[in-house]
Amino acid sequence: MDIHTELARLARLDPECRRFGASTHRYQLNPPLSLERLAAFQARHDIRLPEDYAAFLTRAGNGGAGPFYGIYPLGEGWEGLTGTLAAPFPFTQPWNIPTDPPEHFASDEEEERWNHELDAAYWFALDGAFPICHHGCALRTWLVVSGPERGRVWYDARAEGGGLRPHQDVPSFLDWYRGWLEER
Image (tube, rainbow, N blue to C red; front, side, top):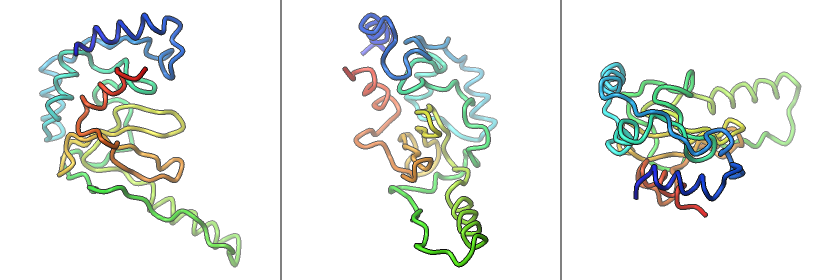
């Protein structure tokens, strides 16, 4: 499957860009990333990007058309969200914490403390991964770049209390992207 051919097909099928997010990216990819910029990014973060993602960036485009509001250019869209990229991604199974509050709080201060502790436990910077696209409402898809899940895409549903989980039946970035191209 040629990505540019598929994007042209989608643009013909949806000339008014009514598909979710298409009005943002208009089925266009950014110019490809140079091999030098890719190497500099990897050296700066002491990682090696998954091969299919690196090939997408350097051959197809450095972000642009893609699921939801499109693919972020490399290094963009994750300010303050990521930890250390070279550190292993901490999960191999879906993760969430209980977010239901106790039925009763003894005081407003107790409720405020509970909410503060929940936020601290729930909203942490993720090591070993970075967001590659935004779904809206602080929901994101992440690409794991370090650890046992390297190369997989994960869904971050913490904004709606859903925790973190791998995208089902999607073993790689390219499989995830192709799935979006093939949606009717």
